[in-house]
Amino acid sequence: MNKEKSNPENDRLLLISEMAAEMRSSRKTVRRRIESGKLTAAFKEGGRWLIWRSKLLAYLGAGGDRA
Image 1 (tube, one colour):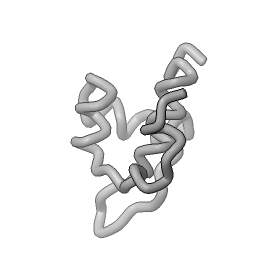
Image 2: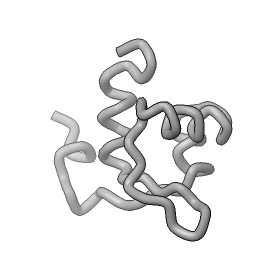
Image 3: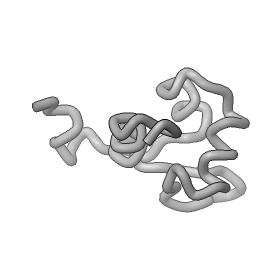
């Protein structure tokens, strides 16, 4: 089992640019995934979307858009 996924101490909020880097995609793609509901954002703060890293890893682990 991957300790990184199971350890809540490793969880942190990511900005869209950080999410895009982990997904190896563009920031626009990340925004589209959030707006379509495919990727669950934690909240929007000052015009910036934030997402828990654990949610991003779960999304990617499920195959992203292929799920």
